[in-house]
Image 1: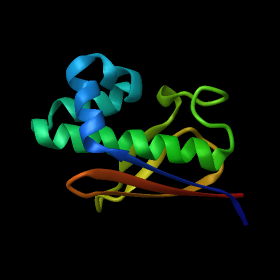
Image 2: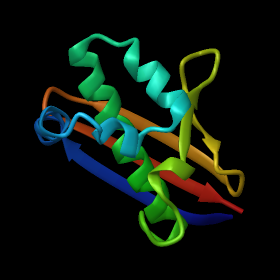
Image 3: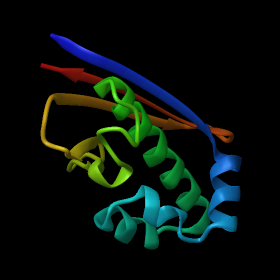
Length: 116
């Protein structure tokens, strides 16, 4: 049974400006494991990665019903990839979660479905 659905969309330009003005921004959004992945990327890909993770974590918190900052923080949500490159939530343990992240030239979008 579906427990919650969350979506989020973010402008890549907004994330780029935040990253340029606040070099510590990735450390606030990404876990240590995600920061290691982020550090290995080309600059253009870094913005897409950061925006996608931001949108996915926001979408997860919306599906969970709390939003970021109440019960969940960005650091408590971690996204990994399976052997085929499909993203999934490696943290937190809890309800089964389905995740889709996509990018265009201007936006990153994420959708999350949580099941009991």
